[in-house]
Image 1 (cartoon, rainbow, N blue to C red):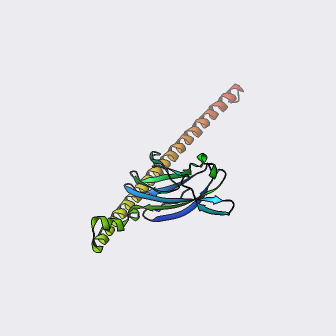
Image 2: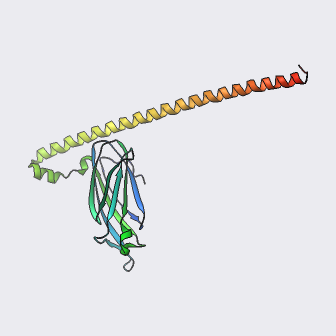
Image 3: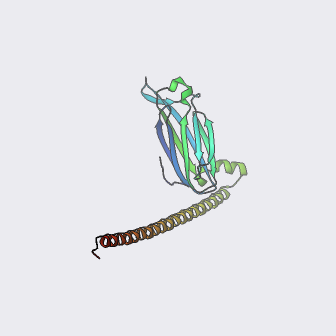
Length: 210
């Protein structure tokens, strides 16, 4: 599932997964950007016919891969928790979640609802905690927020230039392949024409028509 390029914004959603199902999302993220994901799970109660908070024994497994398909996060969490990682390569990052439900008969055959909140870039910072820790005034905190926003905008601009460069290289490579294929087709047609002419000439000479 591709949820689009929403770096530098906050994304909140929920989805349902079965007992052995894995749900993956693709996020386009600039390099050196921190991502925080908060989630909580709800288990479907067939008797009440509603979703209730999942038990503590039910956990979620989170795996994150960078654009080079390298695993940068692979960890087991509880029924509610937070995962954090920092991108080091710009591009599409794959975030996958699935439950460890096979270990618990309580969940067998049921459905799990997962509420997921992803914060990217400077939105991942808890400025209230930062202000309390560094003893910043309101003005100092605002200046720091603006500085980090500018830094994030620069990262996004660099990522856009990176995407444009990759697109240009792909276009040039495609055009070059098309050109070479056209040349090869032309050479093949010329070769076939020459062969046909020689074949017809040999045929007519054999029939003493020429």
